[in-house]
Length: 352
Image (cartoon, rainbow, N blue to C red; front, side, top):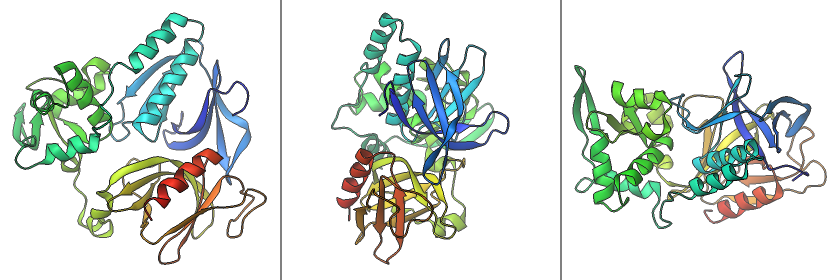
């Protein structure tokens, strides 16, 4: 990292005038957050923009966008709002923590408070959110979905906020109601659960973080897959089996296109059982992969850092790796650092 850099990496930013979403390379320093456009695997100078952090307020989690649950919202002293999307809850929280620390750098008491908050509730290491969701789906011991009415409308396959809190405590996933609400909020932020109806949607939109998930017998929730059914066409083209594996790793990487050979930032998700690597367009609202492939029988290797490797178009070099699938399709991918490239190669190799 360059001198004075607290954190750097990809985030997806909402545009100010046209509210489209684009991946940008962000660099956080003590008093500014600078972002760059990327072209051909390189950041374009001068910076595309700069956010002055003095007097900024941060909202995280920010659930103003239903289909983008991993957003950080920054509001500057002049009331300009920035919406930045991370690729995972861990990544979002790491960015929020560092940005908040940079905002309050001159107030040691605030920074200490942050450290206490950061460690206030942690999921026990032997429990994963996927395991909790699997158990919630269990036909005999899981949470029961049923039709529920609210303000004259009937919502199929839903459950009550208070019922989920009861279930999390009774299954020993949480010790008390406050922990259970925190855990339910995590499940909602990670898009496993969705709010349904006026009461629960109103709580999400209110922006009151303590009340995002309601421990309430009038607030309705459902599993994400029940909320938005795939169309028959999507069901046929996108095997639900290949998306059913446990997420092992995810992050933003640049990828070379197959036809036009242009480079674009994609959110990559690595799953096991079955082993697949999918990639998503972060500028799009829908959470559907734009591509992906089975890792069974694949080969993965780092590409040389001196010069442009064979098969790579444009002046793109550094931190590149290649995946060759069983049917001999070549994928050229660029990480943001050598360390990140090594992590991805190691994680993929374990599943080939």
